[in-house]
Image (cartoon, rainbow, N blue to C red; front, side):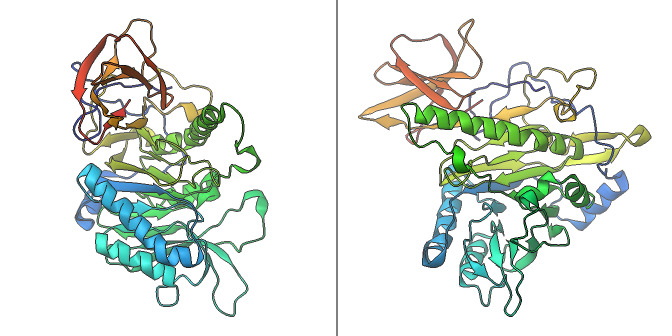
Length: 425
């Protein structure tokens, strides 16, 4: 279904190219109901949107719900700090920032004049010149009984450019009123969309949204952990990690298929554990990038390069990146369709990461390299410390194994700076 691509981390945080690179092949199967964009429409978009086809920086902030005075006094500063940290780590501020469903744990109007909490994060958006998808809030207008689960989109200059009301409730619940239109907004990169959590599980709503040909769908979510939250036991850490990986895999499968067959990227931002599953991830037509864990305060940054989507023979479709992604050594896609449609995504690259401290008790990491030992699984890295000890980092499981005494055969050693190694598969 997918090929894992392994390389040593490069200066940009993405993998270096292999000595025998091959470009990622296009997906081999398209959903018949998914719209395509004609060459004429692509040309019209390039003329209409000044930055159409350029890479967009997207920052996912996996932060817990904030309400009351805490939201007003600390919510905006938390977002501001996350953007500053992105600038420090990535060398650039993001173009888009997204928060999870339920992050604004307040009820009120969806406007800046009467909603102090909303006004405070709008100021952060304006200060940093980012588009902000402000998670969700409970919207209720004065003298009206209806309560909506609403996502507010704020522009680079701190103005509300879209409000989207959730339309699909789990179990058909009647607690909230339902919205009646898709959440679309315009940017200099092209049209974008918002869907709240369970809306993206409705095929009808997804296809209605994709019919507008957005380049990205922002999806604030709250995948509840509920009774399955693991709080006790000797192996609680490993059990949580396993549960998190299962959540990411099972949730991501559908969106990998949607992205591969539509060319539209999906950006999902979840609540952290134990309120949510912490399953935030960014999925494009050929790459899925996962957040490093389920805890609160983690962020995920990626550059999204929108593909061009053009009509082919007999309504088929070819997806070709405008700006080719990093070259990887990949296996070709199967010659025929698999049984489940979600498995027909062509060749996918799955990126996971580990943040490793570079200085512990006076000892520090001096290099990191992929393990090249015969018979060992892919995705193992060796972190070499100044003292000579080696730590095995299992990127596939995003876990750190016990320290070993002997040095494993490694290749592609990479120096590590004072802030630690950012290691990727």
